[in-house]
Amino acid sequence: MTRFADGDDDLRAFEASAAVRTAYHTVERMRAHGSEGRGVSAGALDVLIRLSSADQGISIGDLARAAGVSSRNVTGLVDTLERDGLVRRVPDPKDRRSVLAEITPAGHAWIEAFRKPSQLAMRAMFQGFTPEELIVFRDLCLRLATNQQRLAAHLRQIGSQP
Image (cartoon, one colour):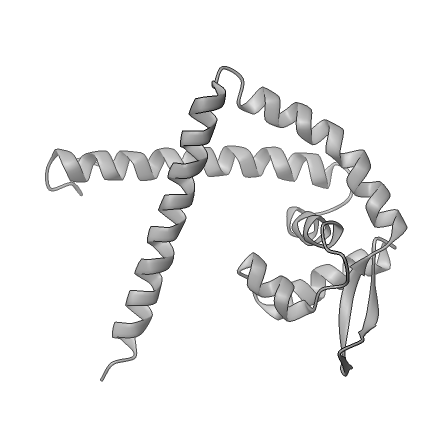
């Protein structure tokens, strides 16, 4: 990494980036292991979690925007979850041309069965962290995400200029 760095500040940023990437992959492996062991992909798990906390159905487009993926990707996930009886499509009461995805009672039961093992896994993953450290860690990660979004918007803006 020192070859990419232009001094100690750059080196610390590269090292922090590598640490975030390693932590991300660690958490994702844990999530994937837990969800796929129960027959649902990590992406489908995200859809189920979003639907389980909604009072009503959510459009495919809104699910895609929230997850930062394409509508085509979410459509495939909803198709699979619908085939498994965990999600259903229902008419949108505000727009009869549209449909919403909503979680079924079987989907709620799946989420409830997944909840306890997830809690145990997260406790194990963050063992040794104080509550205060977890708050700081969360805040730093959210700040990093905000900076990335700001940078992406800036790059989109300068990329569209002639």
